[in-house]
Image (cartoon, rainbow, N blue to C red; front, side, top):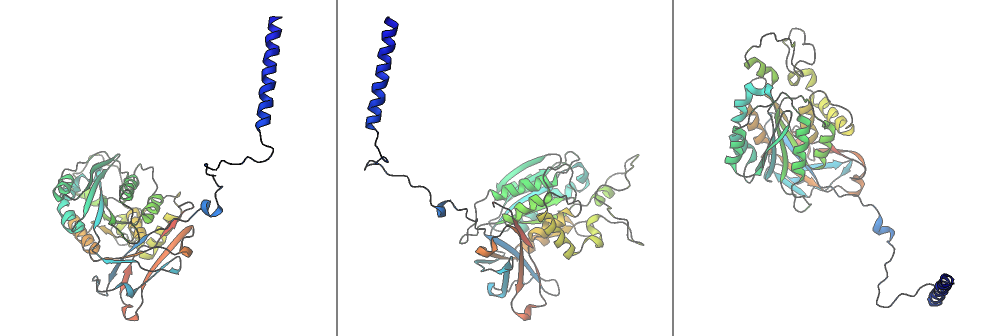
Length: 384
């Protein structure tokens, strides 16, 4: 009886609570309190996806018929189109913008004979390449990627780091090292239309071959283009290294990987890949650079350094013949400090997804004999 009485009392309480709650509920929509703000649903214009405004820097090297660099042009002399649309040049400079440089040095066991020359290059990098207010970071790579020096403006520190480079294992993760270099340069302060900031330069001292990388060259170059990174390279010749090295017993390699990719030209001695005239056509390199960036899933197996420099507006310098590492760096420094930088923010019609071809020309017909070299373009993927 006691249990039934308790159950009956509990049921009565539940009915009373439900009746009270129903009595307090309004018949229509709830009226907000005057002291509480109402959260409005987002408007369509608030949630619409906006295209990222990209600030593009186009480095332009101009030479005359005698291959001498021309530095007397003005912004009004240039016509620049992006995706076929004429652009307004908002920033114009001739070699004066400060440089942020990442130096990538191959430290594999194969370049041991050339290592002393590489170690002596530090002073040329600081005095000729960097220039005033320049800063540099140093990466070494073989089977591993070693961050040897973060960005520094201290010339002695930069030279000392390069002087103490040591050879490691036989691997050469070139593309992975380039990817790390792009990430380091990307971490610098973002440029704007009014403050273009520092020029982002990558300098690679390496063979033209890659062993063991996870990154693909086309993917790395796509990132570099979007971040306005210009790549220069100095080719360390495997052939020269082998000629300078002591002969090895029972050496069975007919040719080192990447050294003689094609049969020799009849009547000619075989030469390294980068010296073969059949693979050194500017138009072919430009087409290969565009293909590599547009097809990042595919592999670029030849001319990696030339493709990288062509895709970003830089240049590759071979050291196989009579050009030394020091001479190559002198040429790079001379070009960097006499190079035009054309900066612009792409117009709305030039922000479409896909490959954007950049064309730079000179307006006046009197300049028709001048030769221009710039980056061929950049690739905008969906969501960027």
